[in-house]
Length: 325
Image (spheres, rainbow, N blue to C red):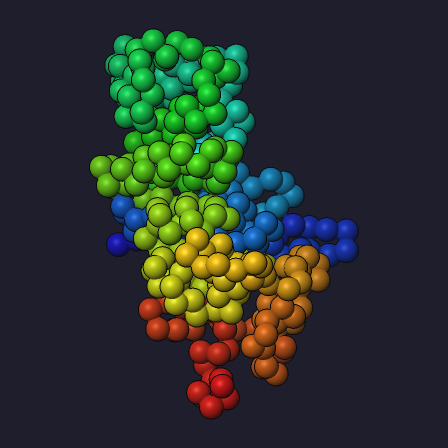
C-alpha cells in the first residue's frame, strides 16, 4: 500500500490577467521505505509540489483540484491547525537553507526538545535524551555538548544535519526534502545522501527528494519523476529513466550531463527555455523545443503513456512504429 498518494493535483495562482496553473494534473505515489526523486528545471513545479504536500503553499497559491492522501487519509483540505499537527508528527520537512529552518535565538537542543514535546508523550528529560540521540544518529560529533550550541556555531553541513534531526524528531512516516544538498560542498553532499538512505532503510520512512541534480537522483532514489512546466513528463525506476529515457525532454536532460569517460569539447543542450505559466503552448508543452515533435504534439496534450519500464507523457509511445520513425 502507498504511504503517500497524490491524485490529479492542480495548484493555481490568481493573477490580474486570469488564473495561472502552476501544477497541472500531477499524480504519483510513494511506498513506505521508498525514495522518490522529483527533478526538473527551475520553475517546473518541484518545490511547489512539496509545499502542497506539507501544507505550506504561499498565498494566493491554492490547491484547486485533486487530492493528497497520507495512508489513505485526505490531507489537502485540512485547516491550518490540523495540518500543523500532521506536519512534524507524520510529515517531516528538510529545506535547502538550514538557516531558514532554525531559529538563531534558540539552541538546537531547545528547538529539538520543543518539537519532540509537541508531538510525542515524553517528559522534558526524555525529550533531551532523545534529542542527543538524534544528533548522534545524524552524525554530529560530541552531541552531548553540541546540543547546547546555537545554529551559528555549526558549519553549513552540520546545520543541515541538525535540520534532518529536527525533521526526524517525531518519527514521521514521510520526509519531504527540498534541495537538501544544494548549498553544501560535494563531500558533505555525499554524507547527507547516505544519511537519507540510511534513514529510509532503518526507519522505513518514505522520502520525496526534490532536486535539480541528476547525480543526486541516481545515487539516492528508487524512482524518479521528471517535471516540465507543471506536469510530469516521465516517471519510472531511476536507472531506467537515466539509461533509457522515454521522453525527449528526459533524453535531453541526460545528454546535458557531463560524462567523464567521453572526450568532447561541448556539452549537449536543449535549445530554448521552459515556457512561462501564462504562455504554455497548446498540445505538449515541450513541443517548441522538441526535435521529434509532429502534428499531434502541436494540438493534443499527451497523458502519461506506458513506455516500457517507465511512463512518459509523449505521443511517440502512442503512434505506430512507422509514424514514429
